[in-house]
Image (cartoon, rainbow, N blue to C red; front, side):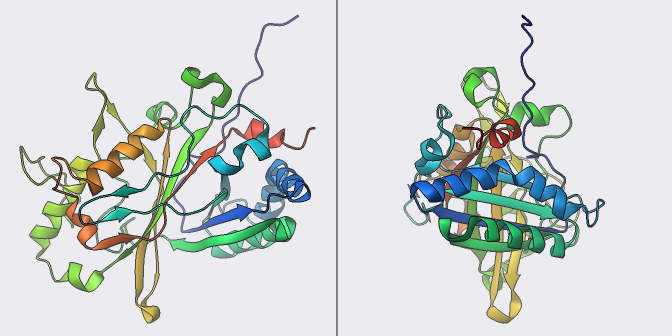
Amino acid sequence: MSNQRTPIEPQRVDAPLTQSATFLVVTATKRPDSIQIIRSTLAGLDSLAKNVSIRDLSSQFACTVGIGSDIWDNITNLPRPAELHSFREVKGAKHTAVSTPGDLLFHIRAERRDICFEFERQLMDQLGDSVSVIDDTIGFRYFDVRDLLGFVDGTANPVGPSVPSSVLVAEEDSAASGGSYIVVQKYTHDLASWKGLPVEQQEKIIGRTKFDNVELDDAVSGQRSHKTLNTIEDEQGDEHDILRDNMPFGSPGAGEFGTYFIGYTRRLWVIEKMLERMFLGDPPGLHDRLLDFSTPLTGTTFFAPSASVLASLDSD
């Protein structure tokens, strides 16, 4: 008998940033027939993706699926990932990271908006009334990968070989190996107030220069920048990265301007620590000044199991 293990194939959590994205969050109807529909749909996602993306193989289409804590046991019948739990509200003195419902996340990406649309249409046809839509946000790439505040986003993302070690669960939780924790938050921005700030003050809040994206020195004490508050080290002094695939969204006619934050991580505690530092402050009381101009409307946590696990969901 061979001792070789079947290779674990992760989902494409590290797919390249595209021109268009859809962030679809739904809750599940917990009837047995609905659960079976969901399981069958998730197991067949690879086939659905191929059927849609074949229209344009250069579109860099990808869809990552995250499963929430409340529905994990019903959908997978597998051991729970060690850190998986519902998004925990972080209530600061001035701002709150709210917790909102969500059983499934579909992070749909492509260079073409119509490819994203068609995949979501066929996906929802399959899911039918087994789910209810909580949020459906369309994101777009903005100029030089900038957010609507005018700053380059995702600069601190890991690259190359450091991506898997930052994003994919490994031997520390073998049952969840090849998977990734996902946290999503939908932020709206007060652009009028933000634009009223001098560029130098904006740069101090972000921690980078606006036009050429140069990192500014960390503050030695007192008020820290967004960049510094999102730099996380463990007790041994080792820094831990996450993979962000944020997208701007909005409608000038409706006066809506925002950023959809999506973070992939091997260690959920890293993002949770970022949020604590942002909303509670570090030192306590000195919250992330970016929150004075950015309001979170949602907050949900998911786990993206490996593609191998997804494909097996309809096997029993």
